[in-house]
Amino acid sequence: MNEYQRAALRTAAPRDKSNEVFHLLLGLVGETGELAEKAKKIVRDKGGDFAQWDTEDLKKELGDILWYLTILADHFGLTLDEVATTNVAKLADRQARGVLGGSGDDR
Image 1: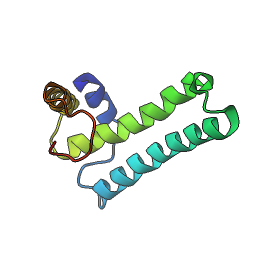
Image 2: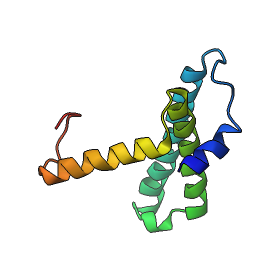
Image 3: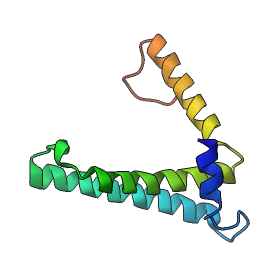
């Protein structure tokens, strides 16, 4: 994941660019919204049959989301390996305690 992060950073704006964090957050939300919009159309037009999702298109949309997430993490000095490792550890802890379901960040 860190290799991807290094490659993605070569296409990013400088960290000190004005409003860059805001740009990255809006980009992440926008790309996630595009993915949700395509999912909505599968529900609306294809009876919710996600087997009909164009996986090449899905791959591109997920890649756009990954890019924004990657650059945003770097902006705050985080590597994708750190983010992924922390997330897996958090989920494993919740699973061990039987609280994967439910709500709240600190469960």
